[in-house]
Image 1 (cartoon, rainbow, N blue to C red):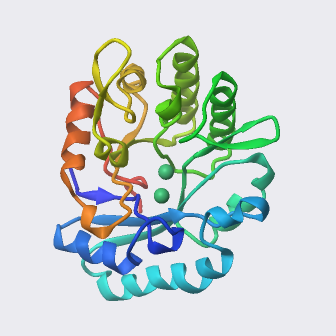
Image 2: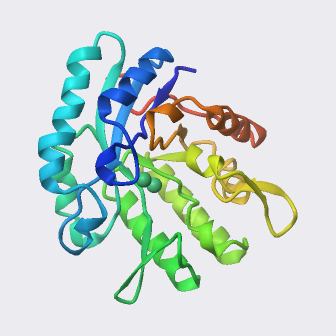
Length: 263
Ligand SMILES: [Zn+2]
Ligand SMILES: [Zn+2]
């Protein structure tokens, strides 16, 4: 396996530290062959305050990735990306972003309850789980996203696995697989430590064992480890090995390539 990681943030999202070059430098020290910078993307209108703004994206973020490329391109392959929420109102916007960065990660952290926007770390019920699935599945079909970050993060507040959780999971896994989107085992969930599920089985909040057990039933599903680093210091920490162990224990094969062999 090549050492790669396509999920790294920067200080611009206001809850992480470091510039692209800091992550690239650390990855070079640790002999990674590829790295992607994928901070939370700028969002239009009402959601804009949650993320870096357009001005920061153009004048700090993209130039920051470019200067890391200039300095390190002979040592590591560097991709520019963004992690971003999906909402159909922004369908016009994702293809535009793809002219500016190499790839988009679909990272869904919000769900709708009627017209209310809910942050899924704070609130989740049957209706918002169903809406989470609807947003994610619609997003996966747009052909704009290469990776689905923490697909099982909806379990953060939902907690007990049930028929709805299984049904939502299957639909997400099947849609990702049909559309060639890579499912991410997210290291940031592992860093939160293990928990017991409702059956007394050891898991993480995410990656959630019931979700990934379903993934293992789909031999064509593509799965990758995403470090989701919010500090360069976390690059290659013990969560990465734990993520690999987690996949192995379920018989899940991992990919280490964001793009096919051609690139
Ligand atoms: Zn973040
Ligand atoms: Zn995320």
